[in-house]
Length: 247
Ligand code: NAP
Image 1: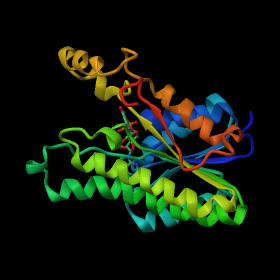
Image 2: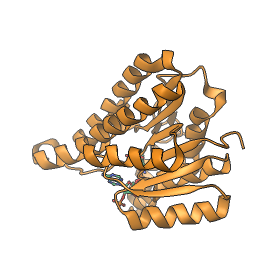
Image 3: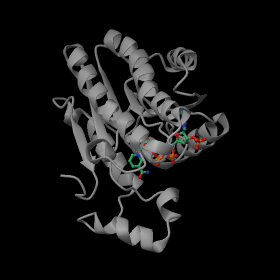
């Protein structure tokens, strides 16, 4: 229970990778703030994990791309818990399309949620963490930040931006006891990959040396390392969780 007494905020925490991270951190004893664009989904997940793991939870409606909502969310968290120890910038979307067909609004939507959302939440978290003289920020990037991916100009640019943002905030606040790192998942088995046609799945698998998709728990394990005291001397780094598809 090494995270007992710590408060962890997970954006987009209601489902998928975010929910797996929330469960993993709760198993280590952390109290949780599950924030999601849908309050109902956040509340359901927070209730479920709170009951299973016996930790305190707070559910928040939060669209990470909206500065006023981010500010209010941090006010609510401070009122409830008095601190924020761990921020997981997980909320992310895709709006895929080849460059020549990509609409500017699809570019903006992905940038605003994935990259600007990470900036806004990190800024509010750092304000609190500087006062605490400690904190962990863990950003969810993607293998496509490093490899590119046809049809994902907006998404891969947003995730590459997250890597640059991670390293810069890490440098700015290392001396204040705050570490900032990123996890870059490859293909992770989710509802999205389950829905793919078998031939598409087989084609994707050929690009993964270990020969299988990753699990949400694989991603959560890497996040748990960055959240733990074992990574105290690690900042500005990226852990690749991709079965070897990018080395
Ligand atoms: P997911 O299943 O779609 O979950 C994302 C969660 O974020 C959903 O609950 C979603 O709510 C919420 N969300 C969407 N827009 C939001 C906003 N503006 N503010 C707050 N929450 C918002 O996605 P996932 O597969 O778990 O992915 C989680 C993260 O991992 C993302 O950053 C993604 O880019 C990254 N990633 C995923 C994979 C993969 O293979 N799955 C690979 C590499 C990286 P709604 O469902 O209500 O929209």
